[in-house]
Length: 190
Image (cartoon, rainbow, N blue to C red; front, side, top):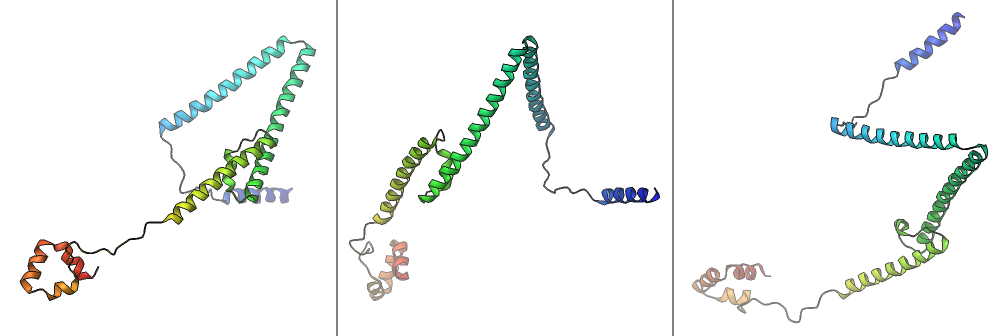
């Protein structure tokens, strides 16, 4: 018995010895945000409670056969919903697989109509055609490029660096004061 107490104490020591870990980036909420969150949760809970109460009233007013049929219908509806979710997941996986096979971005699976297998394939075909057209248009734009220059650009006055250096000092100074940008461009050799 004394050994059992020691075991219990050891376990308690281990539990209390672990420090609680807090994340340094814990989000802090303002009072208004907390109130809003609590109000939303309360409204959701209240709605669920009202639904349960109305269902309980329905069941109370039904006889045994009606209750059995109601419960069967409810179970069938839940099963149908689950089946639809599973079918949707399977169609999504199939759509991603087909998109991947065709070299299309898998992210496009989000815009595909997942009603049934035929609509999935039709949606992928339409997306594939649009994608191919967009790619071809982009390629054509890139290949088009810009028009080549027909003539090398010259300065506006037809003066070259060589002609500028042959000018007398006063002529160069006059040119520089009248056309400072042109003078700098010519002297830099552009």
